[in-house]
Length: 224
Image 1 (cartoon, rainbow, N blue to C red):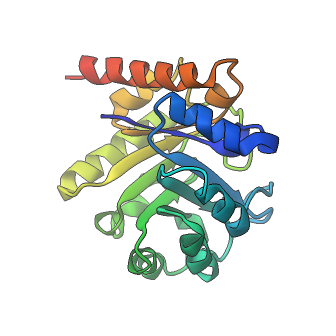
Image 2 (image 1 turned 30 degrees about the vertical axis):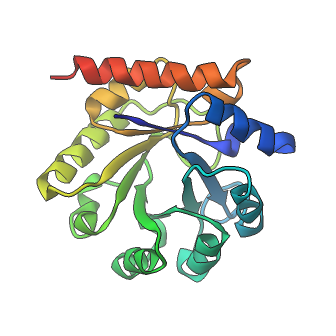
């Protein structure tokens, strides 16, 4: 079953309580939290204090994507704030193995993310240690970007590597996920979809969540 993780990056920040509630009404599985520091990516968003406040509003897992420099110094803060999954960028971690295992020591699931220009083969020595691989199908930093078509081959390659480990590792895709791209993304092997703009700019947020799930289900059913 494909997991739907609405990204709050495209939501109405003046009503995060209401936006999360609408996503839940639609059957969202996770809430995706994009953390940006203005250095690793050209934007700034939220940090541990906001996540701690949001944690009181829902029991859904918080899928926390750290698009920041020096993530190691903030892991404890994000975990104590309520992050259930903590994903770091391979490009931001000098000692990735140490970072991944520190996340697990803190009791969170550990993910690793790759930017569009980062080759998948760099996961070779870490993939067996992670719980989640996140393929960025846009350049991180802003919402409402267009899906990069070459990402499909990266998703296929990552899916193959995950199968070869024999481990329970989720494959997540973030960027340009909508009604036009979902079928191809799932067919390529993804089983977690992050969608912000498609869901939160909709006039019917619950229906948008349900439509993504239906499209993903159709793709799964059609895949040999």
